[in-house]
Image 1 (cartoon, rainbow, N blue to C red):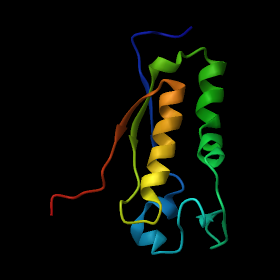
Image 2: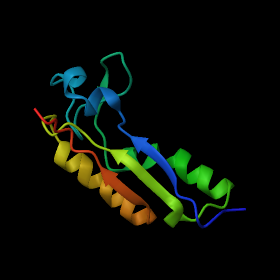
Image 3: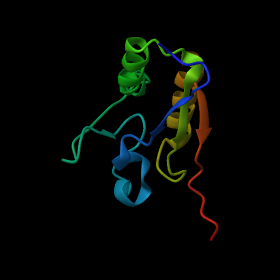
Length: 112
């Protein structure tokens, strides 16, 4: 049984080899050149791809009767200097809002 006093949280930085500038190093750009794994192979994405990446959370919450307003994307982000970051983040926010999840954004800006 779901407990309405608990928030269930997850972090989301996928695909890591896109969202992390040092790893991406100009190889990937949302939505046109997104990595399919670590092999260097890329494919064109649509907003359906990030939506599909949320499938495990949706399945889990349904399985355990967790209300959508009990889910928190506790951290998500993308280095602002990777190509397509603004569109990628906007698509994620749209997904989170559609699901009525709470979310917090990590800005990848260090103090230095």
